[in-house]
Amino acid sequence: MADHDLGDDPIAQLRAWLDEARDVTDVPQAMTLATATPDGKPSVRVVLLRGLDDHGLTFFTNRTSRKGEELRLNRQAAVAIHWWELGRQVRVEGFVEDVPGEESDAYWATRPRASQIAAWSSPQSRPLSGRDELDRRVAALQERFAGESVPLPPFWGGYRLVPESIELWIHRDDRLHDRHLYVREDAGWHRLRLAP
Ligand SMILES: Cc1cc2nc3c(=O)[nH]c(=O)nc-3n(C[C@H](O)[C@H](O)[C@H](O)COP(=O)(O)O)c2cc1C
Image (cartoon, rainbow, N blue to C red; front, side, top):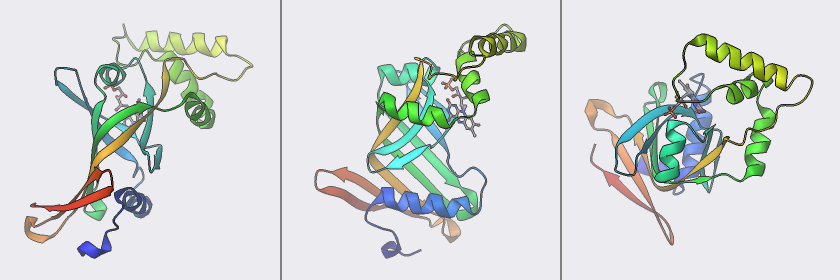
């Protein structure tokens, strides 16, 4: 792929790549999210990209989880997405914002009831005495919300990674890959080519 085939807007380009990835892989929106403690100890895990627009990349999780705690104290984060079948990698670095409550509500409403109960039942990232404890929590929550809709938990919601930079990586033969780094500036995106 030649340079001129990539657009000047990396978010629009990422959207186009995601659309193409849908044809070749089952979960194209799986992304590895890195967060860190205030003193810089990093941690990573996979989350699903649930929204993409000019503001950034949205994912949903438990705000009291390890990642949620790290993001509360240190807003810097990064993600990587890789589609082997397409030979493409995307890296995004920036700051994370909480998405507005209405947006978390709207996404929550699309989740299957079992997933909603699971979110309520799981003290994400905390130790459990065993699988039984989780099963008991699920049973208790099913009883608590029997016959009614399951509300958004106060400890659960969306985050948006607002990009400061986005790198689009394209596999090329002999390890001579193409790397296009877009850096956000006041006037728009500044584009650089990096050595592979
Ligand atoms: C394919 C895949 C998708 C996942 N999507 C999410 C997600 O969207 N939100 C989430 O909280 N956890 C998701 N998880 C689980 C996380 O990887 C992780 O186990 C969990 O969020 C706890 O992470 P933490 O202890 O670092 O906070 C996903 C895991 C996999 C393998």
